[in-house]
Image (cartoon, rainbow, N blue to C red):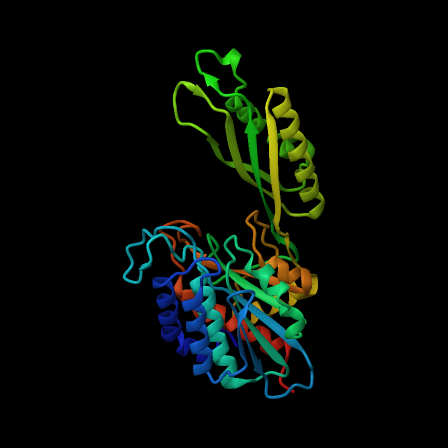
Length: 388
């Protein structure tokens, strides 16, 4: 069976939920109204085993199948938070909250998992337990990490865990995934260079932090070009460069550089961190500056377990023939990786079609893919835990 008939019937209802969430975005862990909306819907579906405040503001709920002879427990995850972006779509249901926007489609992810939850609660055509995971703070807050620290996997006995993210540029309704690394680790760095401020007309009497910063930016690119195997993947990006003054005749005392390091393996991740620290310290010293480096190892590599990736792809192929089992990895990060570090599972992309990229002020989740995404969640449960 492709898209499940019941979910096709629910399309308009689920779209309504999605657009309500889009109008009312919340950031990081401050998803109190979103979490309350999720809880209200779950209760409407007759789901009573609901726990709030997991990982600060996450919601976890369980649905039992008609039988439980298998003892299998599968987790399904959706993220709930928005981004600090001013929306520019002009939609009737555009964000009502200045400075906040669902620019990554988490409103769609939450709505699709709610749709699957309603279907599974009505049918219960499976043997085992489904754990619904509604996570806060994927966008930089590490909500997945916090839910795991709060005992998510052990408290609910989760054995496998699956998640889904929409992806602009992939044809509408197509599923794309791969076994192994799918998304990169996402580390952050702050570099503070301190020199000696002075008059721009007398640079010899100063220690020019701008000059040192410029050479640091260039030198860091040697990590990818000269330190990492060309067949491996790494990104080192300096995204902020700011001095302690804005004058056109003052050499600044300090310059701050901020950026990110991305890799698809822990070996490359470790190498990039080591080389960044060495290069910054040596370059700063060469130009007479002192460097302070704050390096945060943040989201791990998102790695799909081989068996779980096959399970996820097989379920997708029941829903649609449009399944890419060997999609190229991407260098964006995803804190579902924390869950995959604790349990086997898989993360999949669902095509959003020809839309602006996520994190763009004119992005919008494609409501046409809702029945396909809901059906994948439901099919995954029913094929992995077939009714006894």
